[in-house]
Each structure stands twice: as structure tokens, then as C-alpha cells.
Amino acid sequence: MLKITYYGHSVFLLDDGKYRVIIDPFLEGNPAAPVKPDKIDVQYIVVTHGHGDHLGDAIPIAKRCNATIIAVNELANYASEKGAKAHNMHIGGAVRLPFGTVKMTIAHHGSVTPDGVYAGNPAGALISMDGKTVYHTGDTGLFYDMKLIGDTSPVDVLLCPIGDNFTMGIEDAVKAVEFVRPKLVVPMHYNTWPVIAADPNEFVKRVKVAGFRGQVLNPGESVEL
Ligand code: NI
Ligand code: MN
Image (cartoon, rainbow, N blue to C red; front, top):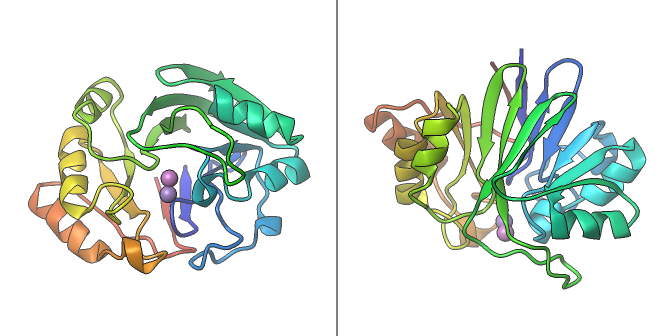
């Protein structure tokens, strides 16, 4: 069984009972986060890009838990230089790890760390764990290759931004669902700040009209697969 817990913004914890993997652990300074970073206990941390609302507390969590940060080369090097354990990879590549596999996908966005270091290309991540595939798109606009991603890797759960301005808004996110064709979509990257205000229930309603299943997770809530 794979348990997926939402911690607000783009933060998700994947837990198969043995391994715990957190994605984009922006907790300190995240007004929606129901937990503090020092309560997180994980073995792996996937970071989609260098922006502060995604890199977040990855480095302190990695150091305290002796966890490995998984990121594109430039961002992984940055984490290593800050004293964290990191695994370098890049877009299009997959790696087999003790908990499953991670494949990095493209994302149309930017990537620089909060202290101004170029962090390589932004990415999304296809994470296979306990026989399930979760696609966290990272911050991105809509792109047609999402169809290719869905065709080559059947997606159980799509974690998809809907907040607009910096990423897809609801209309494009519904299109993304149609391209990826996941069994379930969970919206993310909305309502953290007024500039990314969006109604997740409106998104789920439109996803349903398109023939797919969406579920809103409030910060702290989980879904089990
Ligand atoms: Ni970003
Ligand atoms: Mn962001």
C-alpha cells in the first residue's frame, strides 16, 4: 500500500510502510504546512527545482535524517556543496533506488536557488513505488509531451499545479489530465498566497466532466492506494 500525504503547496510525502520519500519539502515559511521540518523523517527527498517554495527545507532535512536529495545535476551539486547527500540525475533519465524508481521529466519553468545559484533545468518526477506510479509535474506550464509521458508510463496519481500565474491554471491543468490520463489527480500549488488563488473543487468538477477522477487533499490529509 502506498500512502500519499499532502503538506500544502507542492509538498507530498510518499510512504510504503518501509520507505518514506518527500517531494519539494517547503514547510518552514509555508503558511499551509501542518508540520514543521524537524518532524519529517524520510530516507529520500525529491526536489523538482531550486525555487525556495520547492527546495524549501530539503537541505536541513537531508542532513538531520541522513536522507538523499534526488535532483537534476546542478541542483544536486548545490545540495552536496551545502553538505547534504545527493543523487545527481537529469531529465529523461531514470534511476532505480531501494524504494523504487525516479524518472525526471521536463517542466517549463525556471530554476534558481534562493541565494541566486543557477540550479539547472526545472523538472518533474515520475516516481514508481510499491507498484504505483506518481507523477509530480513540478512547476510547469502545460506541454503536449505530457501525452507521451502518460502513454509510456501509466500514471496512478497525477500531482498537478492549478494556481496559475507561475504554473498552469485550472483550464490548462484539466488539459494536462486529459493528456496524462491518470487514475487520480490531486491539485497542488494553489492558495498558498493570493497570487495563486484557485478553487480546487472547481478543478475537480471540471476533471469529472472530462471523464477523470480528482480529489482535493487538505494539508495533512492522505490518500491510500
Ligand atoms: Ni517555481
Ligand atoms: Mn513554485
